[in-house]
Length: 247
Image 1 (cartoon, rainbow, N blue to C red):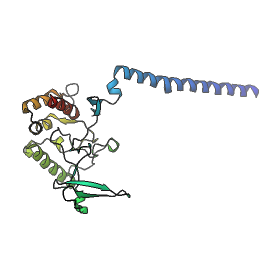
Image 2: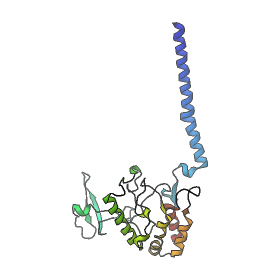
Image 3: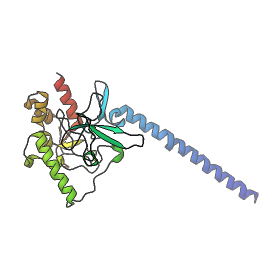
Image 4: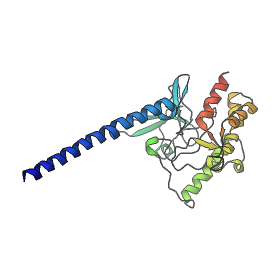
């Protein structure tokens, strides 16, 4: 009996030693080693592929973001469905009401439902996002292709994109009016980038040819030459545009 008990104790302590050794090796040493190698060999990717301008982080090349009109404090400007600027007022209970910037009249509930942001003509715009580019709300709209609400949404987006960029609706590519599966796609098609060239150039007073060259210089080819389509990273293109406009 004593022998069986001592054997069980030895087996128990052997198991505990193995657990301790494996915990240190696989739970501490291995993660630290991989983190160290990643930081040494691929610091940019290991830290989220962050993009900096003048020493300030402006986003990640892996995550899409909006380029809407902002106020002096860097907050998104809000507009009603007719393009009139409004101001939001949040009450203590969390409810939000809106008043027009000009005149101060309060919006009705119906008009308040249409309040949103507007794209900034100075920048290349990304594709739509079902989650408003919120990394915590990554996902698609889940609308089917024959859903009436989705069909109308695509039609509205196509008309808005065509009007904003001064092109015919037939020139608007599919990615300009449909959100990606994640809602965070940082890329747009080359076709979508090209229909924005004249608008960006006019807004900034730049030569359209120079802006088009920026697009051409930022086109990523197909993965291993065969997968996917040519694409443009919107944030990286806008960073290059910012630098070109500053010269």
